[in-house]
Length: 472
Image 1 (spheres, rainbow, N blue to C red):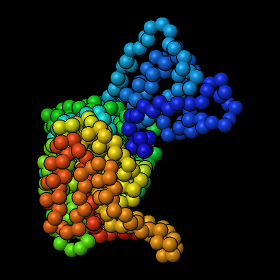
Image 2 (cartoon, rainbow, N blue to C red):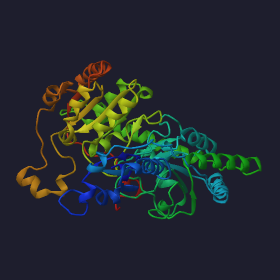
Image 3 (cartoon, one colour):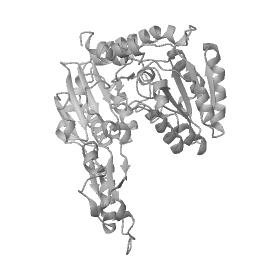
C-alpha cells in the first residue's frame, strides 16, 4: 500500500541470524520486499547503523516518496554498540524544473481555452497547496484531484471541480472530458482502476519529481521534472512575466459555465440518495448526515477499500490540506482503521473519522482494542450492507451456490466488547443523534463506532464511463 501510494514509511523488521544467512529455513525479508520499497537492505553490523539509517532517511525525504526497509538480524541486534553513535540527519533535497519547458508550459496554459489542473499527492507532500491555489486563480483554471491528491485544493473554492478515482465528481468528469490542456502536477498520471482517466487528444503537461513517471501511462507534450512547490512557483512567475509582456489569457467563461452546470446536475442527481428515508438506509444518506454534523476545517476523514472509498470520495467536501486522507491504488481491506488512528495521534485536537464496510471491519476490528487501550478517540462509520459489494460479478458460482458474497454478524457487539462506544442504527432519522453521541464519546478519548444498516448501493458515477464513455 505504501509503495503504491508513494508514502514514506521506514520498516525495521527483525531477521534471521547473519551467521546462518543463506542456509534457508527462515523467512528472508530483504529480497521479498525489494520490489515494493525504494530501498531494501540488511544491517550487517552495529557500526553500520548510522550510515545505513542516514541513507534510509535520505531515500525517504528525497524524490518520489515511498517505503524503505532495513532488516536487523537477531544476532546483530544483540551486539552492544561500542563507541559514539555519530549520526547527522541527511539534507532534504529539492530541485526545480528546467526553465525552458516552464516557459513553454506557461504559454500553453495562458493560451488554452479550457485548461485543467490535475493534482496528485505530490502537491501535499511538497506542502505546495498555497502555490497551487495561487496558480489556479492566476490562470482561472479548474482543479481536479486524484484520490491521494484530494484536500490539496479546497472543494468549496469556485475553481474546484472535485476528485476522481474509480468514482468521480460530475464536475471533474466534465472538466477532464471537455478540456483542451491538462496540466498534471505532483502526479504519476497512472491510468489504473483507481485514477481519473485522461482522454486521448488532450495536450498534456506533466510535472513530476520522478522521471520514471514520464510517458509511462500518458504521453506528455511537455515534461517537467522537479519538486511540486518549486515548479508551481516557477510557473507563477513565468505566467506573471508573460501577462506583463502583453500575452492575454484566453477567456474561460463558457468552460466554467459548463462545469458549473455539471456540478449542479451532480447535486440534483445525488439529492434523492442524500435525503432518502428508505430502508435499509442509503449509504449516501449516512455520508450526508456525517457531513452535516461536523466542521470540515476541524475534521480529518479517511475511507477504506471498496465501495466506501468510491462513495465517499466524490461526495465528501474537503476544505483544508490533509483534511481528507485518500489512498487506494492498492486496496487492502481494513487499512483505514490504522490510518485514522495515526491521524488522531498526529492531530489529537481534530475529529478523526473513517468510513468502512463490514468486510473491511471484519479484517481489522481488533485494532479498536488498541484505540481503547491507548485512548485514541476515533469515530468509525461502519456501512453494513451484509454483502461484499461488487464481488458477485467476479465469483457468480460461489455467490449463488455458497453465498460467499454474503456477510453477517453483530459488529456493534464486537465493538462494545472491545471497549468502544458503539451504536447500531437502522432508521435514517436516528443517524443525527447517534453521530452526536459518538462525537461526544471521542472527546473523552474513547473510540466510537456507528454501525449503520445500509442497502447495497452501487458506486454512483464511474470515472472511466463518465470521462471516456460507456464503451471504455
